[in-house]
Image 1 (cartoon, rainbow, N blue to C red):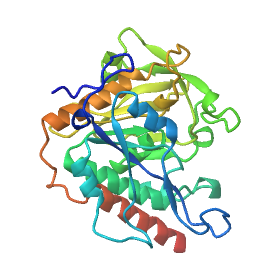
Image 2 (cartoon, rainbow, N blue to C red):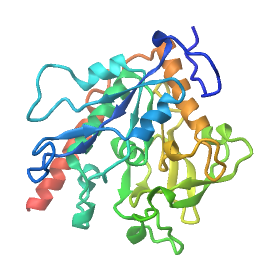
Image 3 (cartoon, rainbow, N blue to C red):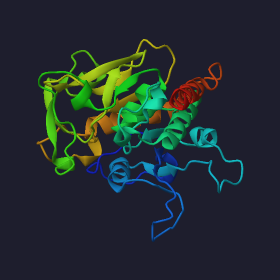
Length: 309
């Protein structure tokens, strides 16, 4: 039975048992007593286009809800989802809290969402330990980098220092803000786009990678200011599972358009990794329990202590 992802033109419909089950991390709207709808309730949700992007290749998409909070019941854990699902996509959204990588927020506007950080870090840990593929989009790339020991620019325009620093986020243009990228020769991304050295992508972020996490490589840089736009765990990292991410939103690419880089190779590369992992499961990484989350929690505590001091 083939588990290969299908394009919209491939024809036919695979049985449910053959369809990949892909987890999608939750976005949060925290309890707000001033909100007229769902007053003082925490909302967890997903953005429609990223679901439809994954579904375009026949995958079934499941939001992975945060199992903790003041309404928590039962014993379902993120590890249960990681065991059941074939892979996970780390969603875009709020800034990463600088305390997650051991820094103080330089501005109140850049404080991010530390509660979501802890959930996301625990989710990455669960899928990493289960040996399941992980793909990150925008915030997802930044969170993955932080989870494995990297750090971020709290604001690219103010901190990067390149004489031609781009405006990576335009709140008015939003998903119509674009810039060029350079694909690094010899990388997996370059293999996915043969003969393409440069391309155009959307840009909807003001934070970005400052120090790359150990064990990862940059697969694409923004032009001309050279901020990492795509990363992947290096192939020399032994039996570790697939982890890749893009700073741009591939799901926002319009089908058939040539204005921005085609999203299909990226989607199929991730889903192929998920199909391969289903057919040939990797041994769970029990020798590294808590490594990602514990590191983050320690940094969070340190940042809070510095703030109180």
